[in-house]
Amino acid sequence: MTNTERFKANIRMVELEMHSFCNRQCWFCPNQFIDRQGPVQWLDEFILDKVLSDLALINYDNIITFSGNCEPFSQRMEFIDKVHIV
Image (cartoon, rainbow, N blue to C red):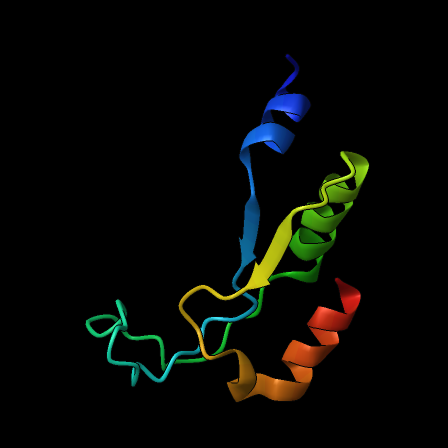
């Protein structure tokens, strides 16, 4: 079995964290003790494009989720622009 076949067979979800901002207000938040309220850092577009093109090359057809430890809609327009890319 090739690495590509192994990846497709075992990876059911790819999680993308689009930016770093988090207001740490969720009761279940694992970020309560780290500062994520500083300057917002976005996932580099080159990296996003690379991940997406690599997934396309192997015909990845499972889940891509936009989560991680951030507030996706705190940067609403920028976030929506990135989702449109995907």
